[in-house]
Length: 145
Image 1 (tube, rainbow, N blue to C red):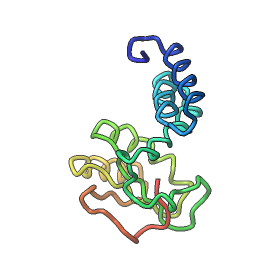
Image 2: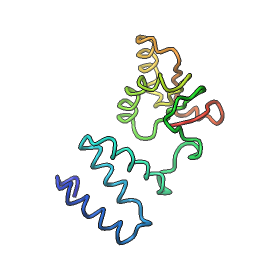
Image 3: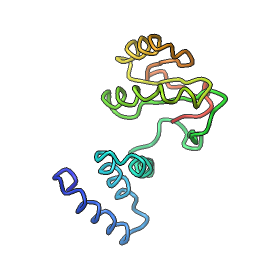
């Protein structure tokens, strides 16, 4: 229904389904997608974290090592989750993280590596390393997002 422009009706249905089955978390994720599309980022991002409750959407790295948003005196890994469009959108926000971590690794689609390296060089963002997704890291970072 959200795709049909009936966002509030869809949200009402998602909330009703949660009352019927509180253990089923997909409605929280679906509502968050509507909130994000409407620009309601604070509530949208919170619900978006429920995508990991579904075995189809496992995180790329251990969930117990997710960054808590506080300053990290170490290395923060930012990994790409969706397609190339999301990599571009979220990659453009990485500059905002530079004050939250001593070092940052941006893991991205290999087609975007040079684009981001050149961009970060241009803006003198020196505490970042850009790598491709195929170079999955296992212990070269402290926390991830």
